[in-house]
Image (cartoon, rainbow, N blue to C red; front, side, top):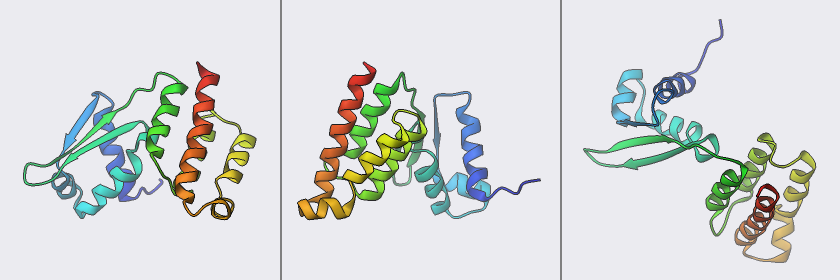
Length: 155
């Protein structure tokens, strides 16, 4: 039998609820008590396993009456996925987060491995730093330009 870690167990628990409903509202402390772990473990699960890239939207309210709401996002087609990634990029993006977006596009077969390699070669820190001091802004503009072009392929 395979042993699962606490992160996997908490993720499975939350996803089990989301199988039958569109959203889930929880209190971080309640879940932490249920699994006898620290609340930061719940944050870790939510921040790594319930991201937009994984098809979820997370809202939270801090304080005594605070909550964390996890919503399932239904993507109609590739254009919606691309638009979400454009929104995620914003005005600037780190190389690591840029790589994550390209990897997600590749995993979902929106772009090929070759296209990914070409895009990654253009957004490398070493390349952008030789062009501008604002490499994160330039990276965001380049990535969004690539993604906008991908949108036209799917419309």
